[in-house]
Length: 269
Image (cartoon, rainbow, N blue to C red; front, side):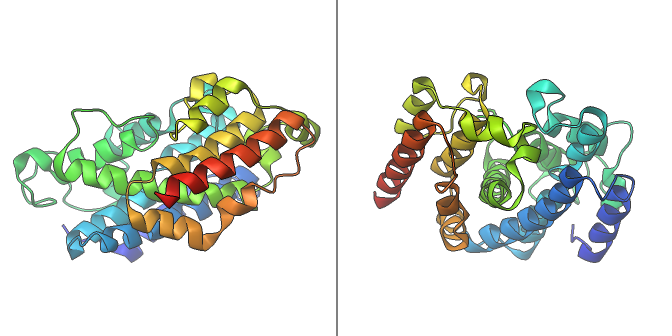
């Protein structure tokens, strides 16, 4: 299946017009969507996918955060633990009774062997649904393999790379739903920094403060799968600007220094 990008963009614009464009969170996710789609395309090309694969990856970026808009409207937060799992929610909107996927692509019936082209068990809809559902998980379900795993990794990398930008260009008070004073004075626990020193993403359930969530976002860089993903993150430079966060808290000051050292060590290998 080849993707009509202009049609997809028009469908996305039509969908997001239902939400308040003056809401910082809505504007953030619209810009984020286009950037993640672009990152997906670049990463897909870097690993040698064919044109169809590149188009599928790009589309996954355009669809991955569909659930965010209704999440913000209903709950006014991006924190899934305080509202709804946005990936699962988005997949339900796209592939459940509402069938929003049909606004973006034609002839995408479940089970069609004419879809992505890798056999009847990897149809367009089933593959895309899995990719959307898995994009925010701490670890991809071990049952996911083959082409589906590749596309999961592409989207997850592309998303992480742009999350670094979001943390710099968007007021963090908006991201974390806190006042500036709370943001600048919150600290970081040893249990969070232990995971940073182990060079992997921080488990969400142990992050309690806004500062810990910021460190957790920095730690996403440990999880990048493809060389192009780290190249994009490094060239854009947002991760280095995150280390300049003007905290007033001593534990956060130490955490920023330690996190930078650990990340530099990780990518020297």
